[in-house]
View (cartoon, each protein chain N blue to C red):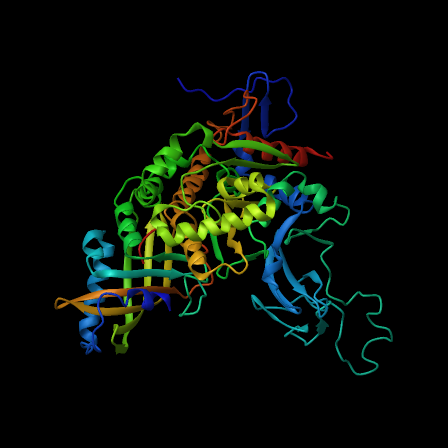
Length: 433
Length: 176
């Protein structure tokens, strides 16, 4: 008979996490996915203190380029000034609060609020012309009517992050071993990487942490995405069946510290960076061979093999996912409510990629990923289904993510990568009582 | 746009004389009914060999290029065929149990014709209901029609969502 899980530990502190490393059990309370008080605390303990992805340097190609974006619940302007320096401001007029930039992106020397006309240079400096005597002499000399600057903006390999805590550790220290994976992704191209035009923005009626778990979950792939793999086997043929059965290809999970984690292995699909499939034809095979040859010359054969022929799904705590799989997706998300999140997904690709190669990459992306793909919609269904199931939490209150806990080297279809996230989540939620 | 370029292969012919607007309206109403009723094989049979089916991201320009920009859907004929096959399987979890839907087609206009076929535009609203949640998709569509062996076929269909994003719809797991 199924019974509600009874936590075996003595006087555990956390109301949300039960980990027993001797018994090999790891449980997460479903209240962590449903309660407004948990979300309020996440905003305060996590989103106000962690490094949050704002965008990629390529999205602001020229000096004076800007884009507007909601990051961690704040409306921001991410831009470059006249000298080309990257900056981030809170998108709100110091006067009475209206957004000073209301378009998604553009190129502007300054920003003018449409409400009363207050103006700002694109370095945030107050630049409104007002007749003498209206305001006291020296009005704004203290910077109090400049656009408010986001406390921290730092980048690693062109991935830009903000932090709303002026005292947070630096980005590189925060990223810890996730830097090595970002290096692998950034090294795909000798010319640098770029975000492809066209952003997939959508909502999922589920808690945001369900998408964290799902984004690097090797366990669900075969069950949830059988219809995608049917398609793939058709497109790839025997190579795919062989790839699926070869133990050498089984992915492994790695703790990247600070709540970040990755699974890395060799999947059956084609990779535009280094693994052609028959469906791409002779031209595709030759194109990929040339890409791999350049890669080998630039980074050496061993690293080239890892970059070209290994697939990786990475969680960067708390809400960034970079999946370098059949294409590269950069995905960030944020909770609107305990049972609702907004998601933005981008495709990352080598700068200067040939049109044929770019088309293959985007087709590969769309076959699996995104709201119209052959896989992601079924993930959305699974997440929303779990959220609906959590209404039963009083009588069925715990998720189990124990898989592989007792292994020395957990596999990608174990759940260590999720435990890495949850341990850090729990540490921050409990911290500083 | 790539859709038009990709689908011009079914055979070069001289400019097709457009049928009447009512002919295209009848066709579009029939297409909508097939999708509402999940008669997907019959729906796929409306497409000419080599046809394309595309949905650029919300807010895209009408001439967005799937080789340069990320779409939601950029199906060639083979991928479209599998989209239909997949939706018939219980493993297409997002649409199993199947959602219910109703498609409204309006503002049908003949936009022009050339050697590739006749271009027709319309607006649409699609209601999708599942799990007691109703999502609404709306926008306009561009069709390229061609005649194959005396039968009107879709050579290209492009769905342009006039929404800001897929909030709150979250997915386009149905065919629009």
